[in-house]
Length: 566
Ligand SMILES: Cc1cc2nc3c(=O)[nH]c(=O)nc-3n(C[C@H](O)[C@H](O)[C@H](O)COP(=O)(O)OP(=O)(O)OC[C@H]3O[C@@H](n4cnc5c(N)ncnc54)[C@H](O)[C@@H]3O)c2cc1C
Image (tube, rainbow, N blue to C red; front, side):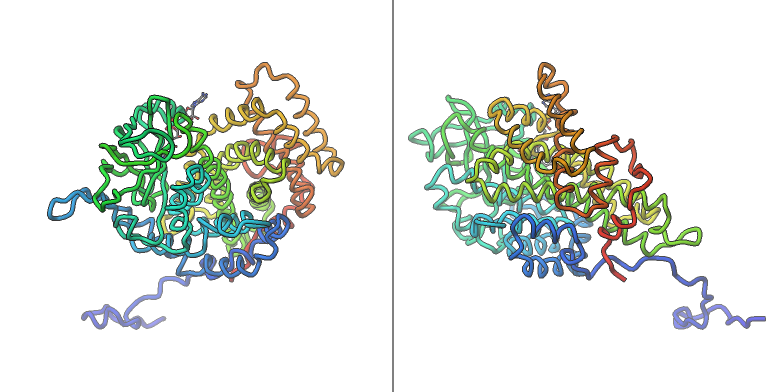
């Protein structure tokens, strides 16, 4: 018989293990997925960065990958999300301050992103591989924490729009592109680095910004570069602590674009008042707000009445970042799911070796790699906008990719969560955060239907975009008969466009699949390309993940996607 200690009688005894019964040993649990290199442990990412022109950046990407995978960095993501930003209208003396109070972890994440040029590098060092290398970094950083990437993206994306007004660009660009972070709530004139947001959406219309009712009144002379006062409201303004915003407002000539700082040049607060913060289901670490403009001073950017074409240059870049962000969400979900199943056993075998789980994991990995391949190819197109083919490809493939990749993410996140089982639902696992974040990219920056309509608009305005798209996809012709047949049918379906708008989702879905298939056939592992053709091009893959046909080399696909930690 085992002798047992008596029950503890004093606090000291309660902490003494001799008085405690040993209940169980913890085993069959994976080690935490941390202290790993997000670049080195991601074969598809390393290959894509190299292939699309950022081979020379590999050492820098590896350095950043180690930083992104460090336990301390991962912890910042958890803490930034566990502590929602708090909005203060006034200080304790009653002065209006419009200040959002973020957890220090949010500021640390912002600092890492800005110091590493996630908002600036393709503009400060353009050329071969610049967008590709930046996309690779963003892809890694967004896996750690996606919400704070919103102001990073907007700051990055504002540059092409602001350059429409050279004197404003001269004043702001250097500070926008500075690789440092200054979170102080001070006039921008006192800062050497600033961040930029955007304010388009109003209550009565988000997709249809022509419905904007905010009015711009000229202070003196009218026209591009001139000062105006804005009166109206904005229903969604993310990252309201940005130093300035690109805003749409109506003049007598129609909707125009303005740059509106949070402070006036004389150091007083610009009358732009945040009403409250949105209570969001995802994207929690980032604040999004509702605001009123009560005569806020702003300067016109670009031609009067041409606000949409001016701000669309920013929106095109934010849409590209949505593709990176959703691809990143899928990659992190695959990393978590494969890592867990590699370490977890059930019914006598490791999950990663069990055929049914292999089918699910390999299917998730395919989706993730296809999203990455597509995104990185568009990054290369952005690096080569002086080449006509690349310009046309980026124009058409951006709305197609934004629609498809973002829309594929929520169900992907849910399936990866289920691979982890009950612990995947718990808030100390990253999966709930990935899941709640997953619909956001699909909805903002132009929701799914709007992307499909934009695809059609591009086709109608510049039919050569479709030629460029098919020319790009056709580069894999002859590599696989399933791909050839899929592409031929898609091309044929474009000959009858009478029902275009009604059928747009079906066409855009298949465009995305054709380009993904082409890229995987040309560049990826044979097992990945073969499974993609079998499950996405030959058949429609079934409704749920885990529908890869017999004969797929699931083990090879999973091995390629699994980070080896522990
Ligand atoms: C977390 C978050 C942060 C945001 N931050 C910002 C921000 O910082 N700045 C900003 O300006 N906005 C921001 N937005 C707003 C966002 O861009 C809009 O919500 C989005 O553009 C959709 O507009 P809406 O909400 O008015 O929906 P609506 O325009 O009413 O659209 C509703 C639905 O109808 C569909 N639809 C619209 N037109 C058509 C059509 N012709 N045919 C078929 N379907 C159609 C849309 O695709 C959508 O599914 C944010 C949104 C979210 C969720």
